Image (cartoon, rainbow, N blue to C red; front, side, top):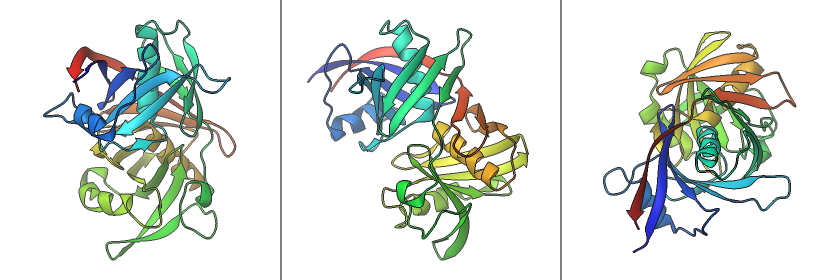
Length: 277
């Protein structure tokens, strides 16, 4: 058994166990990740985040994201905000603007002194082959047969893949029923996060997200970015949009193709602890 220090953090209720892999080397097996994430037997979280020394010269740190099922994924918008605050609070950096190396690229993070954290999430990926998504050509929407029903979705990657479905009322959306089937749809070879988006007006949407390897979460930062991109491409939204998720609000700004998506939202430390694994 090994004693492992951790910090529990949350961004809009999307919660994380954050581990310092800078001052000590960490190599966790999938079953250890699952134990940490277990809400009855471990600490409990949607994802485990590990910060490590950067392996790229243009990054300050590297961060890795592991879902509750033990699988590693590419990016997490709420997680990257929490990780930036963790680095400052732990004294691992004094800089309030950081470049973090992710599985699929870089994220530039700005920690405001009054609380919110703003992240340059990079330009969205719309090429189906890079999402990855099986489609003959790029389009603003695609037909996807799920459980015998034809759905109209948008497919967007924010470093991780998202399928965005427009619904009239997000409270009544069949997230629990359709989410698992969309997540594991064979047209998404690396599985996919499923977003259910209600457009309130041009500057406001409501959103629920069924995350791959996790299930429905209270908030999903990359999902909020993907939903705004999908809505902008369809001509439904302006360039700055308030996104209300079950856990709270994010503000997403995207000025158009080729430009980065900017996300602003909270990042909160819940408690520190030590666990034997």
